[in-house]
Length: 438
Image (tube, rainbow, N blue to C red):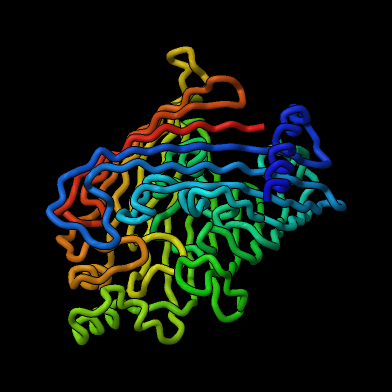
């Protein structure tokens, strides 16, 4: 393990010497490192349950470092490998919120450094026109020209969010908003292992101002678990997304419509609530007792981004899932709404700095509410009882670019009704993030 760690760090150091602004790449070697520390000073709560946010005050942190390697194989063919090293101790052990405060938290598992293969995939691009556009060098994207109209097939080990539900202003918790309600639709229960990755395929058809995306991914053997269920024909997550690019008052924007379907062995909340009533005083996590048979879950989402001028952009996400069964692989949200803005610092002579402000609202289905009201515990939340109110979050951040490849971000989140419980909170969460790219 020490040798692997030393090799990994050596790759990151070597990357800084190799990085340059070039219009075309045959190979890629990049790296990143992100450290996030958060503190909650405590809040009013007359009671707590096994999966409650700690109301007495706490600190949490995450650290991840990633090596991104890529190469061109043949015309239109590219292969990528990502290796990640991480450790961390998230607030309340990653429980107590629907919209969790740190999108990096799923990547870590304890206070000991662990290295793992994050991605290993092949991307093939077929040109559908002679007109070309330039792609900038980015993580898992090599600089070069591609056809404006094209079909792209991605196959292997990657994240559904690598392809779907993109947004220019609210996507990456390493550089933008920290809350995972601002990195994706929180009601998008996308198939993945506990770290957010899976095996599968995705197709992307680019035609003029339109993009059609579709794909299927593997999920976990048990909901929100790490071991992968490779039976992709039996248990899976399907998604399809239609995107349209436009201009409004001369400024670019995009609208995306998403639909997803999961098929997995998960518990139905009405069955879990009935089991609690029939077994008073038993384990409140009764969803474990009623996972019988395969269930199908559906959901939809709307995603809008719009530039107002060269410095200011706004975004909106809205999503809804049926909510009859427990969460398969993401978080405890059945309906979500998020809106916000990102402002570059040109007005105060800091063009590389960014100020962001967002508001989020998460809701639960009636079936999930009833389960929690009766004392049920699910994977991320469970106060032992529930005075239901939608969970509301305000997040603000300021990212200060120290030098070109290093930024420091101050982040503040205020959570009303954490885990949908009006008896608890509001909770304030203060964060500091250091992010470096090589």
